[in-house]
Image 1 (cartoon, rainbow, N blue to C red):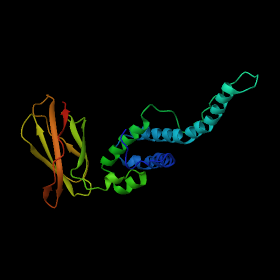
Image 2 (cartoon, rainbow, N blue to C red; image 1 turned 120 degrees about the vertical axis):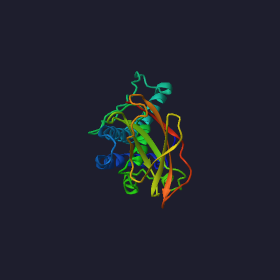
Image 3 (cartoon, helix red, strand yellow; image 1 turned 90 degrees about the vertical axis):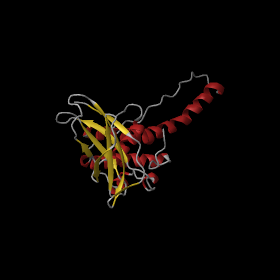
Image 4 (spheres, rainbow, N blue to C red; image 1 turned 180 degrees about the vertical axis):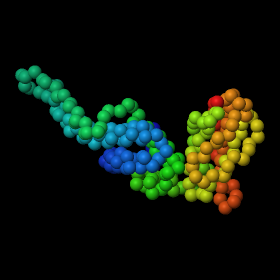
Length: 233
């Protein structure tokens, strides 16, 4: 798993980071466009990870010396008593914490990426959540965006969630049906909705998108990689 620059390297600090994320995400979650269920699942993952790195890991470390002593006694001890091996009892789960599926931290990092693309996200929120790292302060060559096909009238619409960093807007182009690139929009308020009708009514089509920065009346910088999505009736 790739190390995220906002995530602390020391376990003690990771525990603090996870606890803060769980608390603050409950506050900021209602302001985001991300579904409530996904926000709640991320909070559950953060609480579970905090338990593992806190109470559970501390319990394991406290238990470990007793196992070493018992092995030594079993192998080289002189007592006539039959050895009874110690059994580890995990610390009780705090209220509101429950075991989660594997990959909890990976899911948290994925959610952080979604939060940073949300229309309501800003640097103040990111700082409070603890998700602003060195990668957010460097000069970005291109915007960042994601595509989601959503139900619409007559056909699906495409939600284009983007992050323009410190630029005024993004300059967006699209291509359909193997045709030429066409100007779609200059937009400064993520997300942008592509609500165009299908080229052939009732027939799914693949739409390709790319964008670049726009500042003071001029598109600038490199184009992003081309990203595509299938739009269905």
